[in-house]
Length: 118
Image (cartoon, rainbow, N blue to C red; front, side, top):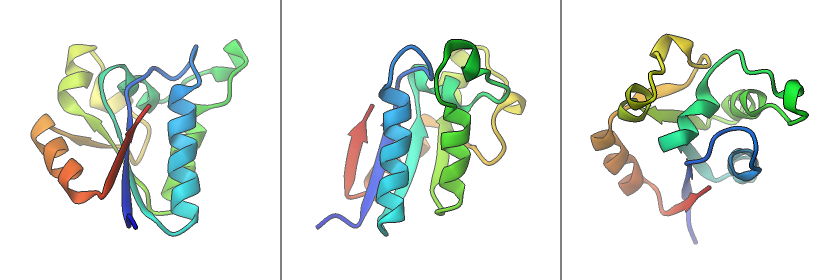
């Protein structure tokens, strides 16, 4: 049986349910005792940008879903190269989100028993 899971979020926060579903899966697995980490890559890095207004599009808040993970010791990462490619400054990220490089991502993948992508 797997003891750890890495949830990779590749989709933007709104317009699709994928990112929210990935964050909720991470929460559910961590609540049940599994070691879980989340990494946001590609357009998924937009989920880590603070100051979102999901009520404007009638969607649940991915920022709230992210910060709820901290209560269960889930680490949330974004890939620095993907931020740079999209012109997102690290200073605009939600508090608690950690920035890693693509090389660090390889290490993170190796640390987890199971990986799932949204």
